[in-house]
Image 1: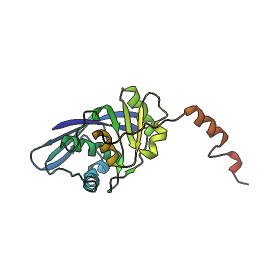
Image 2: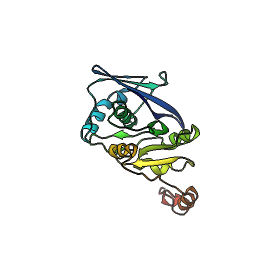
Image 3: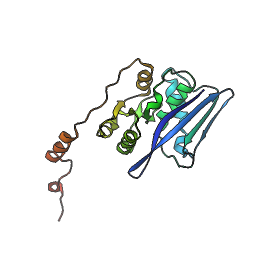
Image 4: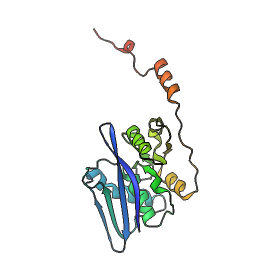
Length: 200
């Protein structure tokens, strides 16, 4: 079965949507193409352990994953969650019709919990520009991404929350940020102040 899920690559302050095509067929093998770096190539080990520790499995079949556009270099471990959800849907372990409406990003730990990613804001901006319904990413990044209007931002702590969300077992509430309030709060209580600088 062939499915498409979506992630995003960040270059500087710009993001590019990445289409992740996952095909599960008869045979044995794990083939990842589309100029992935070593961190992405190693993702199969993290994904296999995370799924196993949450009651799912990396299917013992021929798994072919293409990250398009194929001529664009993909870097980092933030595609773990994207690939994992694509594999679950393509292998019929997860039944959903909505997976292609979201940008999905997150680094997986072996127990299925999620580690924060970089570039949440440009990823969210690009997702909103391209008409995606929402973005799913680690909880630590949700506030940053939620600055973008007209985009549902879901912060999750682990892969099971994403699985349950797409299967209809869990309702997630979009993270909301009042950017005006946050701006004035930052002015009143800045993280850094010249009064803190000490020197000769």
